[in-house]
Length: 500
Image 1: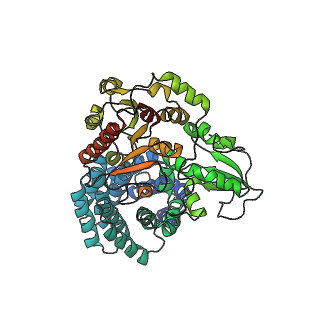
Image 2: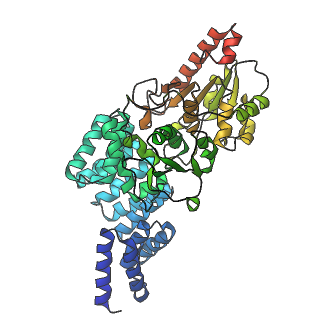
Image 3: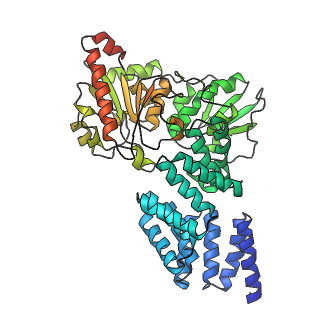
């Protein structure tokens, strides 16, 4: 391959990447690479194509090769840094962005991406400076504006955050990340009519789709049209809690005449089957029968025009079989004191885990109450011996599915949980639940209020400053102690859980 032909192929590949045709670009670049294996530019572009194709390991190898061949290629450091950040290799990613800035001090993209990593490393003041510098260098840099808006929202500066996102969308109305982030702000502030519309932007970004597990299907997506005589596939996206929250819509879909097929992760399978008769529930895509339409479960609020005033089934919509109740009633010792179920941490891989989860030691004051504490967690950050030594009864070995967890929850008088699937499960069962929320909560919990329109049995306890759990836990302990004092001498009421 002569140089002119190679140059033409490279230019074509650059256009194809801009047009969203990474597979075509990759194939052309691989042919050029055979003739010019020591081209830093070809290796770099090939890395970009592979990133778009979600082939991170191969992309990293080509970025490494490009940097080895041309150590001053700032763009390669930036894109390798982004890849490393997405792989949770944060210190390495930060070094790459610092190197890019040293090579090209005027590169706004490098500052903006450095700020993203600094946020994840809890270096928020430094992140703020990085975003501001990026905007000083490029006042119309939409990525920097979106990133700064996210940081402002974390700090509770919601009006300023929304103003930035509005500015981005005024100039770039199709900016997917700006639309998606705006959806969170709108939903958080209770503007469901606009929020659910903007929330659809998640379907347009490959990384958001990959992160949430959003799947593609050849059949059309349901847009709200008649379902009479139609078979509708509902498929899970995001976490277990999100899916539990959306199960409330199943009876409404059946009322519209739909035959329902559900594609869910295994822990949810049996619990979902109890929602309504005639459901077909599958855990693997290749098992699916034929269907007419499909719908991601987090799009159901939009399809039903859900607002704060018409959320369906806020009281309770999940049930537990008599068998499960009997199993857990038999496993637990005779009730002598009120029972409180605890979930103090979620999956460490969750993007917001550092803000939402607690350490066992932080529960110290709560655990001093004269009550039984039962763990509702399947996994612990701590050694099991530390959990039991703290006075919490361990049930992890018996919690193989969410149906098991639901059965245990029915035996509790109160559930106290951070923002995990356990809280959603308790709320969906109609069990009294005290939810502990970080300063910048997930959008579904709104702002300011101590109740939840999604779950009538839930009470919300909020941080008043970022990272400050002690006042929250003190208030929870005070209220629990007060309820126990009221219940003292009324054993029958305590057993029935009437005072929580």
